[in-house]
Length: 261
Image 1 (tube, rainbow, N blue to C red):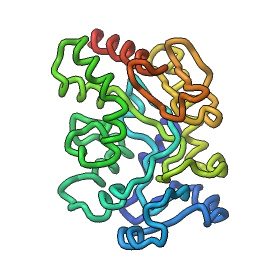
Image 2: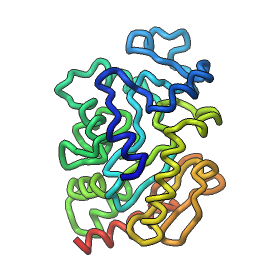
Image 3: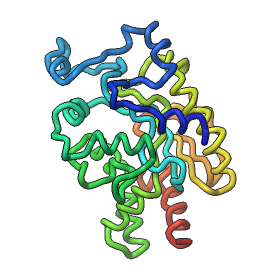
């Protein structure tokens, strides 16, 4: 198992830990760039509602979403965003809803249901993460259902099982974090995994990589039909529509997977 997956499958937030080993020492030098709040301190913050580029290290990290080691499409991006619902989901939503449990299951890669990519799971449709990723992929899901002549719910489930998201940085923030993130162990491990494992799989046609954010840090080469890299103004919106750089390639890859089942 690659060190990246080893680090996260052994990560245990049940004791209150929210930082991956090795990150705490780096972040201690950049305290002004981080904040650790609970629900009450978040909603009572002096600048509540303003854009916040600090890393919210009191929230659960999300280094990846989905079955990262078996997905057929992996989307490489920067880091989880920040929305009031993130604090509410972790601190105020009743336990039976299962949000925290789904995040824990993602760390372990032991999924609780048919939607490994939890932000395509209808049970989490109330969460901002669902809105973000479902909106991003919605047109592709619709088109896939049409082309394969299947019900949309079946296409949604297939996307959730076949697509994963890899974050360069696992910690939440509203804006792009400062450049020091490159020093974090979590970011180094993510880059190492992307190159040592995913890029090799992509070159072997086992997976399609779509780099939608910060390839200046990911440093992925463009490889026709295997690695799509968003350039110029494309990363700003990171569209995954039918007319985007990555959308048609995702449809093509998943159609191949669907037919070979």
